[in-house]
Image 1 (cartoon, rainbow, N blue to C red):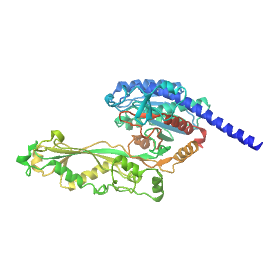
Image 2 (cartoon, rainbow, N blue to C red):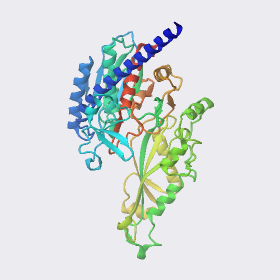
Image 3 (cartoon, rainbow, N blue to C red):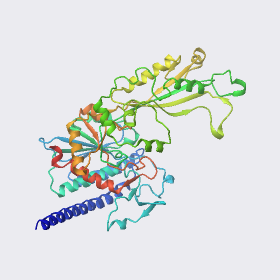
Length: 499
């Protein structure tokens, strides 16, 4: 009798699991159809007409789910805002995603139209195109959907909408007021966002912010990110003769701006990649508890180095995650004269280095730029923000023109934040393993305006596969990640998460 009861119990568990799997797959099937429809609307961030068409589609889809929605005008392209009916007794969660996408060069894609999703499976020979009719009988979670913005960032929006459908179907009383803000200029730095957040501060007010952008950790495990680095830029130009000169006639005589620039750049970093500019790393300290969290991230250093084709990394940090806790100083481009088949025997007129400075919360972008400029002055350069005149050229031995970019601040939420703890516990409960906790990621998401204006904690909860080719040809979304996203949104908005 005992064996029979045990068998009956196990069969009931198997049946429940099978039913749950079938339900999830039906939700995924609906999400795929909706994503095909959404991606078919071009969303080039540089084309305002594209954005308007996407906004119209979004308003329709959110309204169907019971959201009140509105278009928020900005100094640039509009933002999309939606909210479920409010209850003053509930805390408020604000979700941030973006609807715009990178421009496409269709000639670089392995399909005729990057805005028409193609279904593919992985084979030993590469990617094989599959028929969507083959998804009718079953859904292979390893197959992928190829198309612009499938993963960055239309996929997560569709996952969210279908999770709302599931919550409504199951009569779940969501324990939060739910607000959604969708950016339409994320792919071109969200320049209007800071002022827009100030303008619509009351409308956007929430208890915490969840950003659904970017990929999960390369291990594929559930991931929560507590911050991201900011960014600013500098363009540095040195000068030689007023115009390029014959290197036979004036080599050894006319100062070469290429050598000036490289010698100047060489004073900024040591051989291990550490910045030598005084004060650049000020204010940063990592205690044992923080280092433990950083070391818990399951990075495969050998694989990272192999993928980068490097024998050893720089020594700013003793391991990859530690290196991201410091501001960087990166040469992103160099130019002087002509190269390759176009090379000429000349002394160039100018040489330019384009720098980007990735920021952490302890580092102020304007301060770091000023430190770099002060360092350049200490190397004997006359620093200008315009091109030198003839008078300037004959007066100063060494001249540099510096052009500054805008500052996007970093943000980081404390690792012991209660809302963050709730997200971690939900992931553990739902997926049966502790998520990867990343203190700060290397890239930049324009979230600091929300942090600065709304004074709320923020968390990045990525949904898509790490090898999704975002911003590149053949961007794709693994079907299994759609299931993951729907389940995670469902769990985050279920009553147990708010306890």
